[in-house]
Image (tube, rainbow, N blue to C red; front, side, top):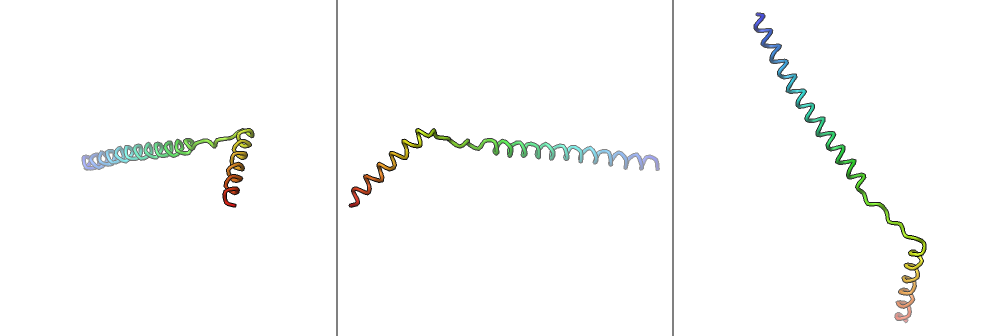
Length: 74
């Protein structure tokens, strides 16, 4: 009877080891997924900022285009 108990305990230990390995693999996959998600969040391009002078030049050019278009429409 002692042999049967030892056999059962050995099987339980084997299964515990397998479960711990599976848990470790899943935990590592979860960490990798979190890192990828964090990297994707950080990888967003930064918003470009224009200087006030550049904005003024663009606005002046657009007004010139609108004036030319309005002039040809008449």
